[in-house]
Length: 210
Image (tube, rainbow, N blue to C red; front, side, top):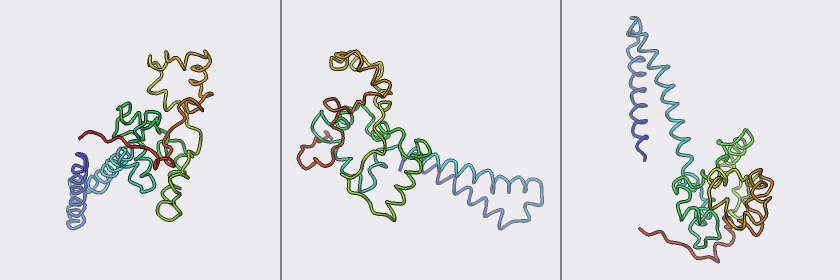
């Protein structure tokens, strides 16, 4: 449990206690002070509690632990530990190119509730499938749309290692096309090995030092 959770629980308990006080001592609301107390207890504090709860859970949903909490995502979590720098997510995760506790969200910033209305709708569909429908096998999970270079460039754009890389400058059109998302960073012979969960039985895994 993180540090915000106990505060939220305490705040919610105060809301419940004040609401009970107003309900059990209705005569308090006859006075001006009682009316103010009732308004705060029944309107203001519950609204603040809901806002705090939503904020807490939205923040939690950006964590790697949350993303991997579904069983179907286990292999994607394992792929972050493949001992092969050719696996792009693994290389970024293991070398702290992205924060490990927010690795998934860093590279998928437009996922479900964080994307447009279509992404949010797909997120609701995921919830439905998780609890009611048929959960696909990990190897069957694909992106709905091609991976957007924006997710790479919000870190790499402007970096010397990116802009002076010999493979990037060999063709003068490479960087401009990539910046316009007309040439995918995941193109063949480029960064085309991503999670590849279907091949995990054939790889070795990196073990982080304690």
